Amino acid sequence: MAEKKRCKKKEKKKEEYYYEPNHAYFSGHLEELVIKHGGKWIVLIKGELISICEGHEITKYLALAREKYPGEVPFASPIPREDEIECIL
View 1: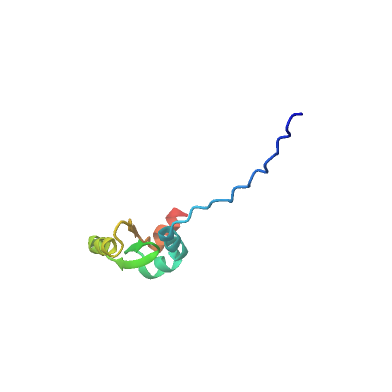
View 2: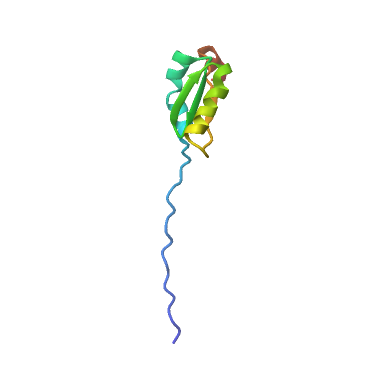
């Protein structure tokens, strides 16, 4: 007599979402950053604010971020001004 094959139920894959803490921080605080700090630069690492600084200070704060979190890649971005945001939208 032939053996019956047992059917295994396929497990549903959980939906996977992309989450990057630096981008989450930046996008979550964008309006506030634009209003208060438009035209400056932001440096983040692991979702932690390292600095909001002028462009000529960026190297200093990137080095500080790398020192604080060795092996991690810091996020640095210019903060747009309000008039620049209008152009983007």
